[in-house]
Amino acid sequence: MTTTPSTAPIKDPAAPAAVSFAEAFRFWLKLGFISFGGPAGQIAIMHTELVERRRWISEKRFLHALNYCMVLPGPEAQQLATYIGWLMHRTWGGIVAGALFVLPSLFILIALSWVYLRFGDVPLVAGIFFGLKPAVTALVLHAAHRIGSRALKNRWMWGIAAASFVAIFAFDAPFPAIVLAAALIGHFGAQRWPAVFALGGGHGGAKQGYGPALIDDHTPTPAHARFSRSHLVKVLALGLGLWLLAMGALVAVNGLQGTLTQMGWFFTKAALLTFGGAYAVLPYVYQGAVETHQWLSGPQMIDGLALGETTPGPLIMVVAFVGFVGGWLKQVLGPDALFLGGAVAAGVVTFFTFLPSFIFILAGGPMVEATHGKLGFTAPLSAITAAVVGVILNLAMFFAYHVLWPQVFGGRFDAVSAAITLAAAVALFRFKVGVMPLLGACAAVGLVASRFLA
Image (cartoon, rainbow, N blue to C red):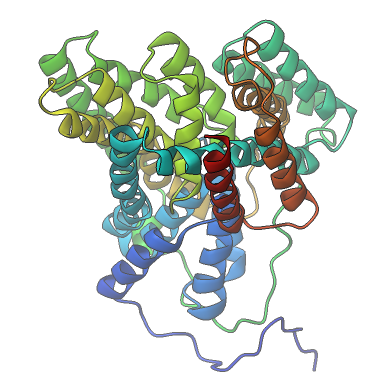
């Protein structure tokens, strides 16, 4: 008799008992506070907890859900949590899982944003950010390398990445145009050269040996997860209705040109363009939030990314910082309610950024459950991911300008920041240091260096 090789010892050959909604709620809440490390780290945490340890879902089903989330715009780790929560406990299970993945980081970022704006000029805080900014520059450069090593598998992909870099760096092309052009190249190119645009697995093959799962490879799709047109129409109508209701309320209170209304509309567009992760959409957020609407400055954007790297949850939660700073500086609720205005703006931004992700999962999940192993959307994603590499490289250069030349070419070269950036890059590329230890070390170095330079 042939046995299946095991990657982990099976202590209990029986499938785990049914998981109550309360037990799942406690897990999703815990995950919201420990989900550090960006999407790769967050997906790894969910795999360890849900596939290996708790066995709530088999690896094959886990990877199938992940492949769908990778195709979608938006934070794939948050969408994966939403998908699994929905599969286990229907619509409310998905909403709770996805919301608890985001809410802890929202509250933490509101608090940190207030500290930043209220005490940012205090030497202690300024010194910490003096060390964090070079670390963020190295992190963005490392992100470009990490995505590029996976995406740039042939000369076509290298060409797309180079073209996107030239388009945004030399011609200031808008990010949506770059995404659309790349998607069209992938769509039509795959019809002629399918092998060129095939998306690599990237997550490895499904491993076996963790034991039977509650939702196993051959577990029948539950009734609520089966596709029906009425369900699809209902979810889409409800999602669109929520968006219209929220946007209508903002227009009624603030007018079409009000700051909160403009934030809602802008981050709705941003939510639909986050292919390739948060680093990919940051140039678009920068273009809109810094250059067009002037909700915050370029250096403040870098500081916000540093805060986003130090908190749990999706890195795209940096938009909450953007919203808080914009709401505070634009005094959306008046000069006597700066904190409340910033908190409301952060909440508005978060709502419009994540609403599409919930709609994608709750509307598209039943179709995915009916098409195991038959997803055919990867060619445009391959081209978009290649284009994203060029966009992120441009973002790294933008950050480097502001960190190494604080006055943007007008001031002197900052040798200390350059040394911290180089050391951070070596730690990431050569020694594979984690994000949190790196940020902690750079913050400490920045604090010490700022004391000597003062």
